[in-house]
Image 1 (cartoon, rainbow, N blue to C red):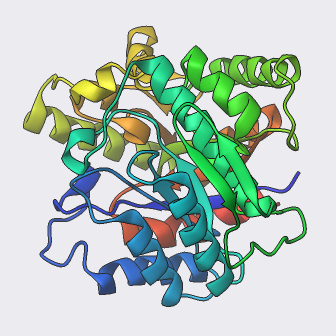
Image 2: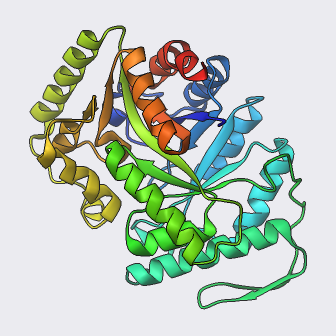
Length: 354
């Protein structure tokens, strides 16, 4: 089973993301390029680039970093509505050609400040119906010519994207990653995504979701190659188990001093996937061997809600257990970003390549 390891580049206007040192140049091209090149040097495939209104445009950043690197693969987070499917399919096909096939795409359907960029939002069923159509149109434009499609949300007529996507072994087009834990989200993922991304849930929960998604794929008549699975999680790695837990607990204590029991982003509270993580703290501070749930109480959100804590051997053991469930794509991170790219690339990744 081939495993792929990516990192995370936060793409934030505001400094200090998840404990990153506050500097004026935190989001400069030189700083982000240094991270991308370090990923190449230290064994990583690429990095997820965050998206959202009020952040630098993710596609622009991805194209710029790809131009300054040679093997770095950006996993570009994008939103239906911010993009229309034909515009995005053409832009991504162009970047994929210019980079010799280094583009990956993460479709995000969670709530955002949609009105700020002229979009609107219905209920959950509306959001995921639109996402499903977006995925269908983009895939058709990448794999077919003279595409005509008319859905409830998107349509194209006699459309052919140029340049054409060059199929590669095991990759007919850029992989389409997708997240979400609601029933509506899972139905979209089971039929239309290439990779379902999970956040850091306990092994039992991930196993249940993989089983359910595989069953859904069969019952809904999936027409694409089998759905693959990925894990997006914070990995807090230090030289020894004791050092890791001492420093992780100290970092959470600092978060508590700054924020207290801080209410999460209101959009996150309505997201099923985020709420699943926040609810884990009620089951205990540490689940499985080393899944630390306390960060979510003090402002940790998204992939920072739970952390895998330990020595390189501890964390590698945990990641191998996720692999045994069927996870083949890993998107890891911790701060400070650049030192952790180097530390985990040198100490953690070799253990996972064995």
